[in-house]
Figure 1 (tube, rainbow, N blue to C red):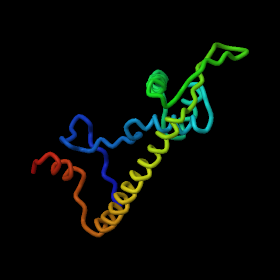
Figure 2 (figure 1 turned 90 degrees about the horizontal axis):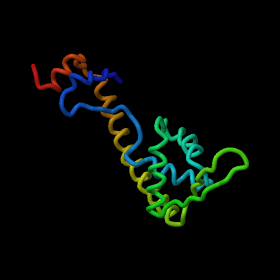
Figure 3 (figure 1 turned 30 degrees about the horizontal axis):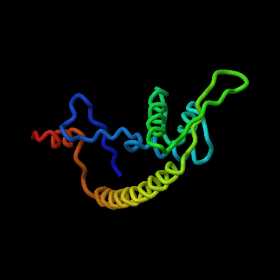
Figure 4 (figure 1 turned 135 degrees about the vertical axis):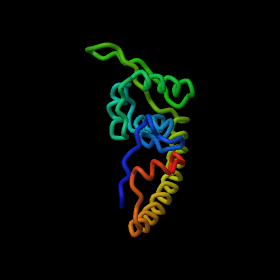
Length: 149
């Protein structure tokens, strides 16, 4: 399979791929619901436990904002914990409605996985067929994307 280098962001053609990765939109919500289904936790613990899902939270405020919205939505609850040492901290827990929403997210992600598996299988088949043909240069691909040439 051939690898096409990424295009320069200043000269990308309209409609070019900006596929830097990351999570699907709102993916933090089902991750937080899942983590809270495992055990109640405070914000910094949740942030740390989200790393295996691909989150590197540079701004913890975004997670706290999401948790507060989820609490307003009734899918999580919170209580203040007064540890023997250190400041008080809010501990979040999953509600019954949160469990139902987690189930719905899991179902949706399962459907999305099937769609992605189908895409990747078709791409792999297509890419293996392309390997037998001569390939255009990167410059030709860029020229074709710009409609020049």
